[in-house]
Image 1 (cartoon, rainbow, N blue to C red):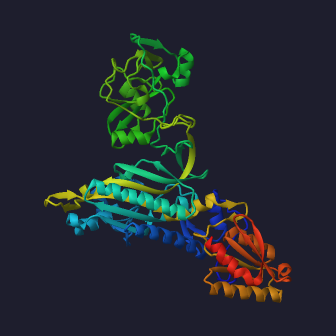
Image 2 (image 1 turned 180 degrees about the horizontal axis):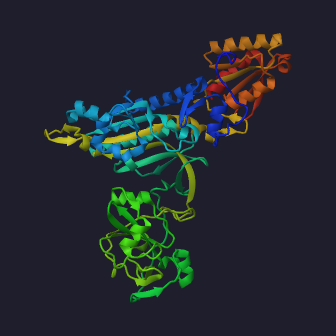
Image 3 (image 1 turned 30 degrees about the vertical axis):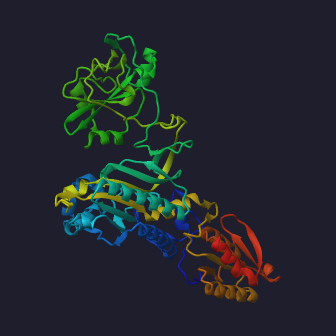
Length: 564
């Protein structure tokens, strides 16, 4: 393709609203243009790369027996009401005002609807169905370019099984396929245990890339490889020790003391002796949560315990329920409360917490003696430097971007939508499902996040929109033009995909800057100086390595480079 003909509107300056490298470079390289908040048009260069990503995905999905569908993005709202996810997605789901229709943020319901009507027997299972389709989510704050948009392309796949062992097998097949997809795309990624969120199910994992621009936060152990999203990450922090001496409860006057740090300083005690009380509401039912010291409650972990929506209590509610303000709340003497406790406090005694009376705390609380605990759970958010749960080495906490997410859904959707099959004994059973997603544009963006320099992008051979960037340095020099045209023809005859900068209205310096910005792996530079000696200069974009090669050997050099 000739650069004089193709539409690649490169930009010299960084757009003011582009804050992360991938967004900046996708705009500057003429790959995308914004149409509205979180909505992007893919221009010819960007779409070529997008198609290469999709080709890799299709290769690996087909290799595990996947069958490609193309499902409608426009769905009847009744389909989503069957599973209760209209409420779960809330304002994130786009609704049509003049029809009872929604724009699909994912396709579990559609897949389940098809399976319900056509999967009748265990002999019809297992199945692996997938699609690459546009999705819609009403992000309140679209940002980071194509990483967080309102309209995006997702590869979503679904396994349908008769047995839980079949689900495990399908889940493992997808995990391996994802590793191959991201490896072929040239990404450095890691896998974390994750929350299933609104998707539900018994298990899930995320495939992530470490990035300062990432919106997810993960805990990583460089020693043993432990990795988990901070929503579910745990560490090996010590628990409170149970004292041999059992002390009687005492009321302690603590004027103007409301925070853990203030209480620790006022009483001159170790933080492990302080039990912070938090109150959340499950509809109209109050829940008291006890945490050690300054440990922060992880609301995702709390949701996995409560299994329904909760919210922090408001100040007026708190005063009505306990008789005290925040900072003076404690577990004793409460009526109608469910009490759950973080595992770091399991079975602890001689604790100090609020007295449910302003300016007072209670000392020597024994959770085994004084409190009816409804359960001990891991409820805390871990911090950087805490010991790894597996090996004890310090954990790193890093920002990351999610590339893909796999879920064991189980029978959540098939039960809700009555998608059943008949087993060997003629008994009706729900289809067991798994769900597996990849953000297609995110692969492009994450690759750029990991592979760029101050000049531009550095594409791998697998994702590059073209194999070679042929640069005709001086369009006014007859020999340069003739040689460049000759090489363009020869490279095309050898099935090398060439972007040929034949423009005669820009300077050599502009051409070189555009070549580095676009980031095609190999540049073939036809210039007067080397041509005078019958040579051509070749430059590897990623390393900057330059070779001077005879004109007759350029095609074979390119072919060897592409094969390596």
